[in-house]
Length: 474
Ligand code: SF4
Image (cartoon, rainbow, N blue to C red; front, side, top):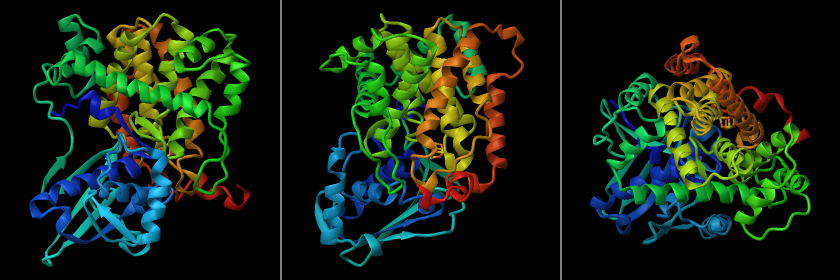
């Protein structure tokens, strides 16, 4: 039975894409680990990268090439100062050398050593190969597959090797929603309590709190930074940042000098349906503008959908419950992570496998369930909220214009967040005995829909808006 830690689902990373940026970055780090017993970076003479399928077709727009190179430099995506990316990459391009794993400088030409292949590798649409040649003439090459949400796997013979936490110690191994509900019933516990007990088998409560606080702080900073940054997004689409003006119109002339005071200022603003819609949208847009600008966000479950969960949680903290604090944040993230894990196990969180239903749909389902628990829903109602949210994202395609995670992605996060809030409210008024679509059925339906979806709509930018919008008009 496959179990997944919450901390595998919610990862701190760098935008704009978990599958096309964070995953390839982590694959490069994995490759560096693997060459250690072959002499390591100091024995390398040459390195080349091959990108296939979706990683190639939308790789430039998603900064896949940049991410792999930063990974080969040995940088940690959690701590690397993102404001240095432009300078760092410009230097590598100019000097045509790369300092592998911060140890050895070798020749490296962006144009010649990164290869974009049009074909797909059989195992997964997001395939890549890293090949290194050593000073003794030997070489090591490995294929990696970025399967969504920053997860990376290798295919070795018939075995799939995945870089995730060992969860064999979980007291409540969960693969399906019905198992989760059975544990809740048997133990008379909420979903967040069951998930917490699983995580406690891996780390202490202090460590869990520290990691969840770090995740929330990145989410909060990404909302704050996005709301306070003007200008254009990179990539050539000429997309203007919108969170700044929207926020300015909502916050008025309030004074604040840090995030705590800012939250208080938001709590003191006018509350009407229109204002709430605009605040939630503003939060989601802010995060995804930071993401599109190669900033630091939390994959939740992916980078393209990184705005939904922070927007819904921040809505709860600033609008719904002014007295909420870390305990509510913790419960929210534990539930959201578990619901994301259920979709990853039963379907996919990769747009290259399932289109945008796998990204925005899953993030919305995660947020809906988590919000429902905070609003007092029973475990059954929590999964009803998630089911409702996914039910109304089924079939959503992935068609980013110019391969950039900007249009339709940024706005789409606002839709996912609003649907999540709506789904939670409906679920709170739903009797589980009358539910027609069980949670596990919608997970399976999402997966079946994913399999039926044309490749054009799976993060290839070969269909939908990506081809029907005239770039010269942008
Ligand atoms: S359209 Fe959806 S799935 Fe595709 S890149 Fe944008 S947010 Fe991600």
